[in-house]
Image 1 (spheres, rainbow, N blue to C red):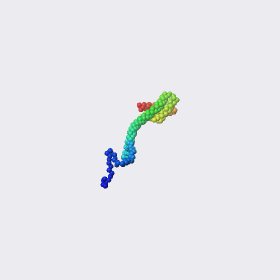
Image 2: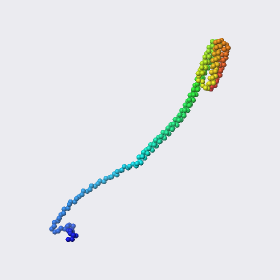
Image 3: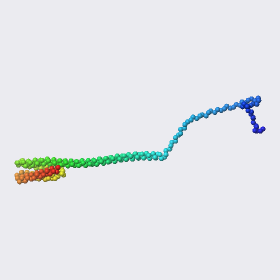
Image 4: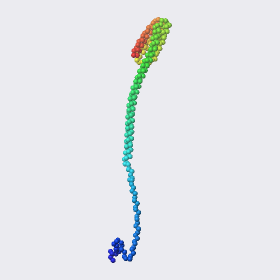
Length: 238
């Protein structure tokens, strides 16, 4: 048999049914149940959030930040120092001006004190002169006016004591330089007057008319000299 024809030929029915030989029972072929596959689960859609990867800082960033902070700090400190120095300079200038004013005030006060001290010395000297010269002048008037031994002796003694006190006060007093000339003249007049009174008292005690006359004349001269000293003092006080 030809291998190409070694096979069963089937006749197809015109209606599409397979033709069976006469008397053959139809053969029912049991087909395996179809396997129904479960539908694959549908995956629910989801949103994928991209994970942000940490960006690495550049290596130069930290030193640059530190440098920037340093610049800011140094700038702030520099401004602070500048501002402080400016205020200090202004304060120093005000202090210098104040010190100059204080020095001027101190000098003025010193001058005023010196002037006041001079004026006080002059005032004290004039007061001493006025009091003591008044006593001596009164005593001299009593000596000139006396008309008996007892009154003349008492008046002469009182004049001597007051004139000696006048000389002592003058020597103890602080004599202003502006009054030195009249004070020297006054001292000479008092010395001459003291000597004249001593001679006058000695003449009255010894009943020596010549001594009395000489003493009285010298007393007159000393009083005249004292008057000239007072006139010079008046000129110096102007």
